[in-house]
Image (cartoon, rainbow, N blue to C red):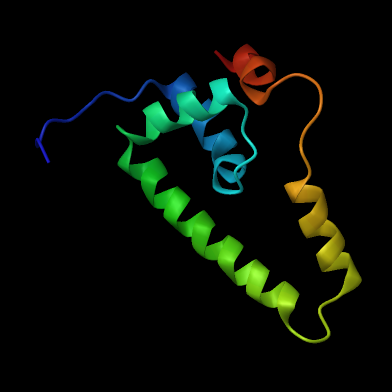
Length: 97
């Protein structure tokens, strides 16, 4: 740890934060993945968010495997894990910049 404080660019942070759930479930495209990985290398707040999202995802996977898991929950998980179509999130969120 270098002890230096890196400036956070608010617009870039906002875009990276929006992409974190897809980063955690492994469905970002190549450019989005590179963008988020670069941001995560510098942003402790987003690193913590990724850790929390991974814990949440693990709990959801465990809950889905539990006897009696609802069909609605399983359907939601499938929808979240489906590959996206159309424009990438970075392109569609670029209007935030």
